[in-house]
Image (cartoon, rainbow, N blue to C red; front, side, top):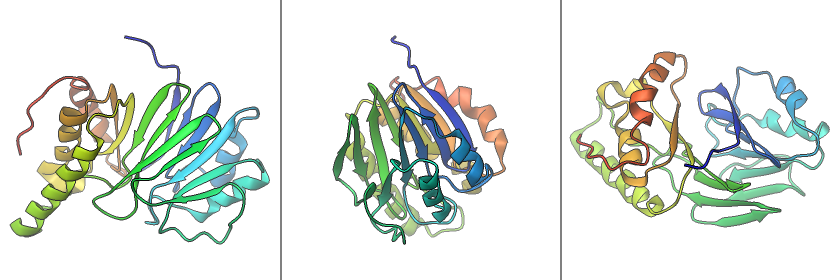
Length: 227
């Protein structure tokens, strides 16, 4: 198996930086790492692209636009329902099922089972999927009818993604769902088969990472997922 040359840093919740040979990507920055500290880490000589999957406060912080002071050439790729005050060059708003080319980096959007979009990004030969709030939200306190409708929406969306080659997937594994916390991630691994899956959207519940080896070892393998 070919090695992947990439550096990933966890910020908080669904926030990550991903550094490849020529690109520095920031996904769904919210908090934890101070905005000025992220600005100090923006590399010179690499193209910087910042993604925001939707406008929920745990995925989007308008302070990301302050990074322009450090890097005037920075590019932003935002869900179309985000209405930033800062417009102009380098601002790209995308609805679902759209494609964008940014000087060697390609972006393809898929849908969500909540607000906004999910992103499939290809940079330096590496395929990265960030799910945003795309998940099988099987809430214990919801009605069976609503949960069945959610299951249908989720599986339909995964059907659109199936067939894409994905090296790294960032996907929600949310303990608030109780026994269903990894339901969506397991199904995603089974149907899409990313090479690596990195859990997100777990807030302060870092114990989720203890489950990660069990989840990740199935990546790229056929597996039957039962509810």
